[in-house]
Length: 258
Ligand code: ATP
Image (cartoon, rainbow, N blue to C red; front, side, top):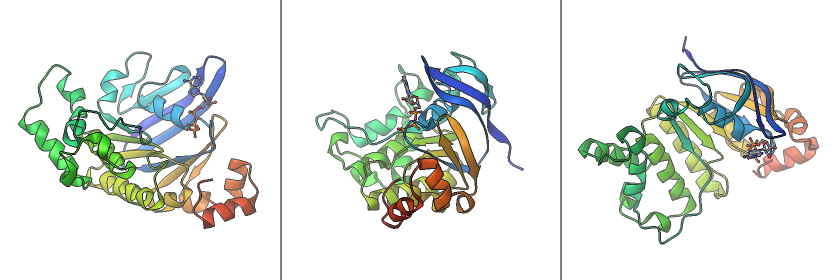
């Protein structure tokens, strides 16, 4: 049996008067690939902030990779947690190439004032190879497509050598082909690096292929969890998104995010 590496009990998180998580409990075992879906504002990103030690817990208990989280002690945990967000707008004039950007992932281990050594560059090149970006290693970071940028973001995250891999809508704003490619890459990386992965997405088409388990969130709570095939029925999605079943089915047929 794999060990539980994320154990969240009754987490309550609020931003001033706005309660974003209302008593969320979740356990994740080492090696699992968990998809998290739900409407805008459901609390998905906030749940990730709790896992990476940045969430402000009002109450509840959180243990991640053996660290019990209390305010201010998330730093050592974050070295072990890789995070990839949505495609960012990068200024085309940004004076860094792809290889240098991936090196940023090493600084958590190196410390900001240390110079990277041969081993660090080896890791960077290995990760660029893994994400299929070696041929663009010297290109300025601002001269990449959205899909290429996400590959670099994944390589940067892996260069950190994380144990936990958090992705917050990494395929948002990419075209369908790039979305599928990135998802396949994330799954491959998950297996190749024996990671534990939490993947927030609005792209339901991808989940059954990639995830071992899905967590459905609504209004700051976990509304359901289980195997994708059991949970991602049109009826469940209709309840989750307050949308008629026919509309859910139309969107799924046309591959439009719900
Ligand atoms: P989306 O799919 O739109 O990204 P989400 O499910 O990730 O949404 P969260 O971003 O976790 O949802 O937000 C949950 C709630 O907390 C929302 O009501 C949001 O407005 C609120 N919230 C999130 N971040 C902040 C913040 N920094 N300050 C105040 N309120 C916030």
